[in-house]
Image 1: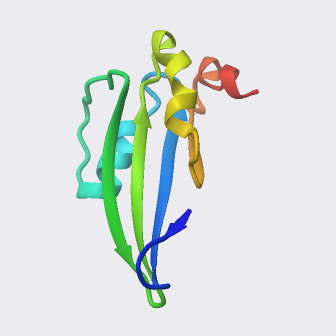
Image 2: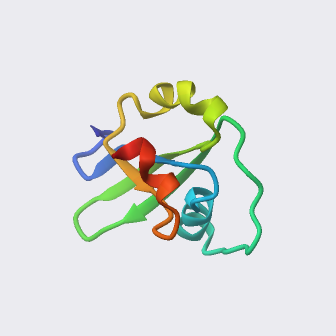
Image 3: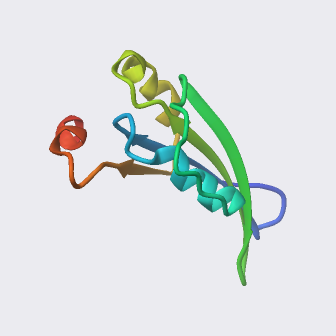
Length: 103
């Protein structure tokens, strides 16, 4: 996490990790745009989003990396989560296969 400019500005890298079809992109789009789509195309490689949140004492700028869940992109994940302040692990509670990579 980095402070930029004045002490009240914070920049934080956030990464979403998880298997394909678990809803990572849906979570990000809901947070960024307030939108939800029943059918969302799979992310290829990774997608980048940015969101600024103003709090009482600070302004936080989130740099959000939505990583692809397909097996062929797993080797790229470390490149996206390196230097992240936080990671959100997304899995499908009705499908144990989606939790295998995190257990």
